[in-house]
Image (spheres, rainbow, N blue to C red):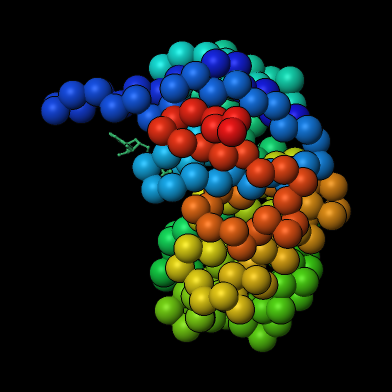
Amino acid sequence: MLCLENVAKIYRTRTGEVKALDGISLRIKEGEFAVLRGPSGSGKTTLLMTVAGMQHPTGGKVSVAQNNLYAMSAQARAKFRAANIGFVFQMFHLIPYLNVVENIVLASGAAVDKNKKVRAAELIQQFGLTGRNLHKPAQLSAGEKQRVAIARALLNQPKIVLADEPTGNLDPDNAAVVVRCLSDFHRSGGTVIFATHGAEAEGFADRIIHLRNGHIDQS
Ligand SMILES: Nc1ncnc2c1ncn2[C@@H]1O[C@H](COP(=O)(O)OP(=O)(O)O)[C@@H](O)[C@H]1O
Ligand SMILES: [Mg+2]
């Protein structure tokens, strides 16, 4: 599903260079739930952004479902991402002036049609958000916000979901619910990469990849 070959990312800043990814080679199979575990600064966000097609690597090759992501035009890559990749952020990144349904459906990038609304209603029910349809993000708990964000990521039925510390701002109970939502997607055949510095998802993982200073720690 996912293949990284010697992927490198160097950030060039005014004060010098930061080597965020230092030659990552990795394969993730279709239907795998992989935990990407590493301390802050180890390169987790950079790796997920690179896999999502949102950040050009400095070197190496990234393929998703046999498509060489960075050989595509920016437009083709954006289209590919919308169709195949869902992203969940630590800080939720919901749009404050839109309600739950609108937040879920808007991410599709296409006009809101009946099918999208039906799919959103299914996800709202699946994630225990019934009755919250018309709430704005400010009227939701942190756990509910993240479930809305997961529903948004799943709206287009992506093949792969990339979650970047999705439980980082949640208490343990809500964290467990969010892990279970992602695990449900995995059990329905989806591929998940779950980046974290903690152990909350390890019981659900097929595999744990340890990241340290921009490379995979084999020890
Ligand atoms: N836009 C950026 N410009 C410069 N350095 C960055 C940028 N983003 C991240 N970094 C640096 O790259 C390294 C990896 O960061 P990141 O991928 O955010 O790690 P993590 O998500 O594991 O905390 C860190 O040293 C961080 O300071
Ligand atoms: Mg990060």
